[in-house]
Image 1 (cartoon, rainbow, N blue to C red):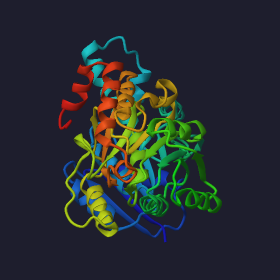
Image 2: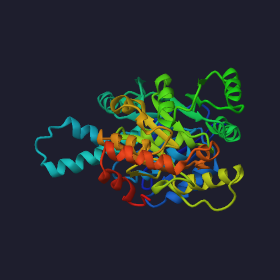
Image 3: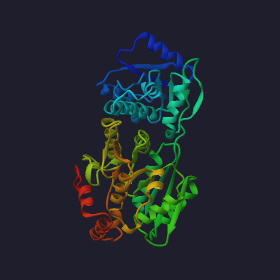
Image 4: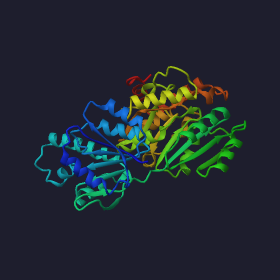
Length: 426
């Protein structure tokens, strides 16, 4: 049975609720008997989280969102209900009225804050699967602002109100490098296939000349799964060059670079994509993890086996649902990037060889192009760390020393210092 949750502001009156009910008839399945209404107040986020995690809802309706409400509510819904159809009923969108008026009477400072508020409204709409707005004019204007969110137009949802159709899921291309480490690769792939519920993705494996049974294992996966591609190199081409091979054949809207020594949990990809889709100014997103450097690192107590990892990832998702914050760099073990950003700035710099500082360089170029770098703290990806170096007899410290010189020669020592000494940089 379909279950629906309707979230409305705390002081919604009877007339507003009747208006909402009237226009939901055209977009909800008929015969829904299990329905709950939650009256949301700013500060009631804990109660909302408990409600969202207790039941799997087929549809979640957010009624009357505006810049006057707590937008953390919308982020929380999208983070915790990534399998649900999220519908936004927006008869009071103020940004459209403001945009349609003459802007010449507003001074620059007021206009700056007005634009910031309207941007919050528009970006909140990006997180919906379906939107109902007041009129055809507002529908057209809204679609022009969020066209990159892949929301398309449909017929009017009523005599006065208009709707947008559900989103087409963007395709994600997941690129995984392998070089021996068969057991680590198998554990990574098992968690990847088990816990990636996102409906539109491909996996591209690039093997850097493995001498164990890794190549045969990958070929077996390719024969079994239609969305898997395998590239086999005769020798180790290094992190940057091999990932670039994968990027060249990737067909997705988003590119995700993933190490083969990670373990994933439920909702990992959906939440990262949700974060990326929340604002077109975000160019790259990374998760939090147990093993890296900087602001992505969180302390993981307890067992480090699969049940322990899943439990901790669940707690992290619950505690930080929809909490995303800007940073200065993302470590390359798990990095989600828009393909159009890569087309603009170029791929990884292959001068960095086997690995180290190519992610610093990549993030610096993304930031220079005007995009934001964001950590999705509701996504935990377990990272064993350093396995590819130690188990393949590569001198990690020596490679890092070589690559730091390449980075400094390309940029300058001040750029390296800025990336490493920013908050929690070390």
